Amino acid sequence: MTKSCRLIFLFTLTLTFISFSAITHTGNTAPKFKEKLYSNSFLLEEPTIEISPQGIVTVIFNTKKTCKGGEAFIGIFPDDLELRYPVLRKRGKMELVNSTTVKVKFQIAKLENKGCDINQQRQKRQGDLSFRCILFGEKQHTYDRCFSYARDQQGRYFRAPAICEGPFIDCVTDSSAVISWAFDQLTDSYLIIQSDGLTKLNPEVKQEFEVPVSGLRPAATYRYRIHWSESDIPFHSREFSFNTAPEIGSDEAFRFAVLSDSRATYGGGDRSVEGVNQTVMNSLLNQTYQHKVSFILMPGDLVSGYVSDPAELENEFRSLKRIIAPVGSLIPIYEGMGNHDLALRFFEGDRYRDFVPRSGEEASEVIFAKHFVNPENGPEPYQSVFPPYKENVYSFDWGNAHIVMLNNNYMEKGESDSVAHLPGELEGVIRPEQLDWLDKDLQNARSRGLKHLFVALHEPAFPNSAHVEDAMFWDGERPEILKMRDRFWKILCKYEVLAAFFGHEHNYSRALIDSTVNPDYNVPIWQIITGGAGGPFYKEETDTPWSHTVKKFYPLTHLCLLEVEGDKVTLTVKSGEGFEIERVILNEH
Picture 1 (tube, rainbow, N blue to C red):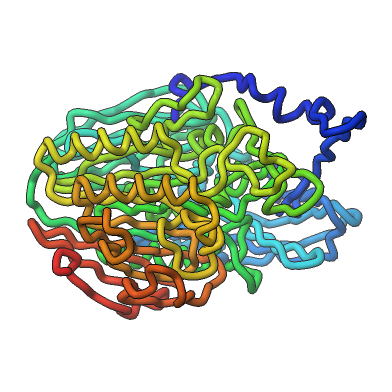
Picture 2: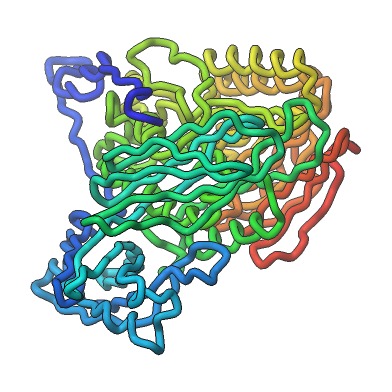
């Protein structure tokens, strides 16, 4: 979301949030709430990068806790790779300055020698480099960063602007798209779009760019490249491409993917890279690219989150963006929020029960919208002091289909009695204004003749494993949650939604929810839980009131591929290794 589009609001209920000393209990005492800080980060701050005229790169890490050493490697982004992944080639020298300061040195010349210089960086006098530093504290911590360099006519090296986020292609329609990217410093940059002709867009000097592109043709391929300069030396990105959507209502066939819960897991290394499971995400996203999907849905738990510091949540979002960029530069990814994508205020007690949402510019919804580019057609918040729904609740069309992303982790607070009277919602709750908007949105889609309706959100309506104790069930012990869930599902029935996609549970399940679960569910609808993008696996619960509706369960990493061909929609589920788990036509109940 561009800065001009962001909702800047003051949460007047903040007094309720933070004036804990004013919250009184029965009697003469007025106990204070003691806030507790939680963090996933080993770093105190972002590492600094400097380049000497001799081409020595110095990276400084400052850590929160004692660092016992580590390893460092540097490499390039090979031009020959179809996707822009880094490949490490040389080792750096690591020095422990003190118990919490680490200095790493690399020599650029080692990558320019004739045995390594496959990108011809020496001849070009410039290059994009990537490094990985592995630091050892109580556990292993992995950090990936990139930078650019150049050499002047006298052979002196200097640091040049580098694209550190993206580029990303988002909000693709049959006539428009949004391309976004960010540099590691203020830069004079512009975008070139190529199809039949050449269009130069938005020459500006800034650090973050979000460029809307209009006037495009349906079902067409466009190529784009980013240009910038430093000290009169021109730079440009590699060439990327994207495809626009078919004309709205068209029966032209397309394919899309759904995957969720990419947060870190056990095992260290690439399974836990600043809040993200890079091992699984690389595997699944590469599969989406190989299967030529038109777009990707990611309904929540993008990162590990559940942290106190909003800046730390931002760092984890940046980690995710580094990991998804090779595919996200070519295929639009539509993100949603989950219960882990939050920065919160925690109190003494249970980390997952004693917390309330942050407010104002620190609200998780605001931070989410700052980092991801999604449609802005969602509902307005119930009160102007509530966080915005912009870019975390939205819908879009693709050919003859209509897709909705909801947020049932909006303004989330814990379930503890100590915070019950404070503002916020339990996880799994879809607030009434979202449901009202959903009803109107689906009605509009049907009135325009769109054939296939899909809804995605994080916490399942009918959980089948570890989250029967929350989501939209809460062990059946919260009537208000069940009432909300029933209203939600009846809206899906009203407009004959074909499938609802969820994450939260780290497995795959396909269930046909029908009148055997509730007589008011008069249209069978597929519930597809697809939380297999990285989080630790969960086993199946087989004694829920809807266990009889589950047609397939798989406990490990996977992704869902949906093929839409006219009236037919086929679901194919692939394992993390690329093997087929199942294939089923969803229109045939």
